[in-house]
Length: 267
Image (cartoon, rainbow, N blue to C red; front, side):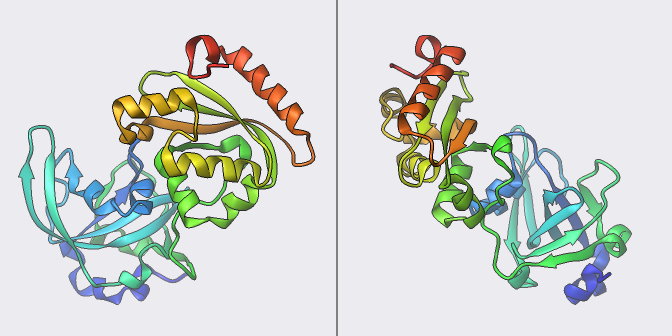
């Protein structure tokens, strides 16, 4: 196995100057999504404690069990307390920038700590894979596992991610949009050319996809409110299924979830 030091030899002379940030986050605060949206630096600079009390930060983001995506090496410049958190000022260094979003390392994390001294763990961080191109979004994980935020949806559509596009343009079905602030739901259907892909691309472009209630909400609360929407798939059918059948299934799920009475469906 190839150790991380062999990939980034600049680390070895100054191991004791580095903190390794094992970035995992919590539900709704995913560092991988921040990375895909080019906001990881800001995400990392917000800390509940003084976690980066060393000169440098080696940033690794959770990718899959025991696999971590390299997100860069940062210099910690300063730190200020801001009421309920610590706000760091950091600088992304030129070291190994060509590997950002491409280098995936293996590190068997057997504890919960997320801020580690590099000298204690460098010999357990190994090369898993170097991708040909920088990864822009998480690959498609199966229809039954689709539960993505509006920001994730935009990243998927805007990057034209091939695994998602292939999966979504080849099936018809019924989907659910949930407002994570109030729990209200909207049931919709995807059919026609490119089915889910083309339908969800409409949401990615404006947040409401032309739905009357969602459009009204965004008009009242401004477009940024769409960040509260979560997308999932309720049911899939073959591309050969008639559009009428898909519309019937949409109505079925509206009845089951009572989205006409208590959600965002008007009909």
